[in-house]
Length: 377
Image 1 (cartoon, helix red, strand yellow):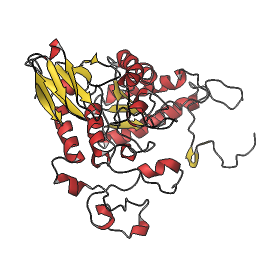
Image 2 (cartoon, helix red, strand yellow; image 1 turned 90 degrees about the horizontal axis):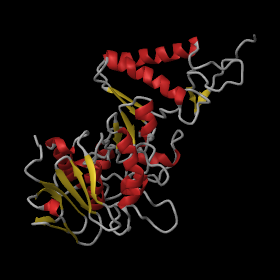
Image 3 (tube, helix red, strand yellow; image 1 turned 180 degrees about the vertical axis):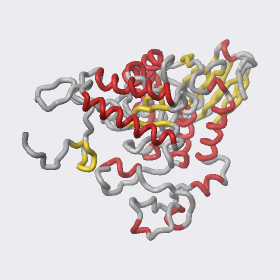
Image 4 (tube, helix red, strand yellow; image 1 turned 60 degrees about the vertical axis):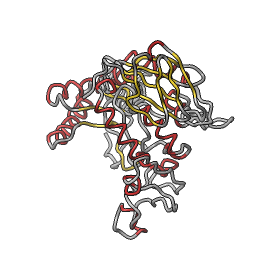
């Protein structure tokens, strides 16, 4: 046995040691099994770290790269999932109110196999979520569903989303996101009116939605130099823009001391300006979160069903006893159905009217259609 030189296996950066959760496939004598004493000790040590924060009042954990614990794992991440199930058992027993959110974007594995309460629906190449907001990475233009002239098709989203939803809805939640620290901000390509409809959809779907800081005011993706391994992601990590004051209200420090620059554009969005405007993106986002709180049928567990999904709008879906309709296009649309009889518009973005069995929607509009049986609070 030779003396060690102080080096360790790392995860991506030298400041991130790779902890020993074991190797599923082992071809070296020093590789530990996932159930070896040393791997189990790592697991128990991490549980103690979680207990420390939970005892201080933390509500739960968002787990970055949750599918990479046990090395040389199989495609179904069976060994890593076993670790997370063990962690979940501890939480259920000792901290039953704690939430566990995975950055995995594979709900069948993260929720059904590994036991996470929630799994992020991430912006992966041509998955359903990608088609909604960021379908601009191939030739032929931007066909994102919420681009008013993009010609997007909601069925592309549904083909990916529906099987995942149906297989996991009784065990956990698929979490829609506006953005995260790895993803270009949606305002990179979408206007405030387009964002209003996108957020209306994300905040009225099943599961637990996540609103990334600054997206509620339409903060832009900035083309800035990489910082500490951020690369192209750095532009989504810039300071929050509170007001028109120094450093846009983020800090009183000298500008050159800021970790990243803020948006210097004359029309850079900020909270103070939008709070005073009832039609602003911030005001609409607040009204949508209030709507979700008001109606139990818009919350995480209420049933979701597709009513109308064609190449052309409107897209109509049901949450519990509510009907919801989306027209992201630049043209007015109409739809007739017996399901509309007796309903009225409880909430709308831009024009949406029900008359008898007909629905008329103006360009870039969204509507919640209520009947007598809807549950609100």
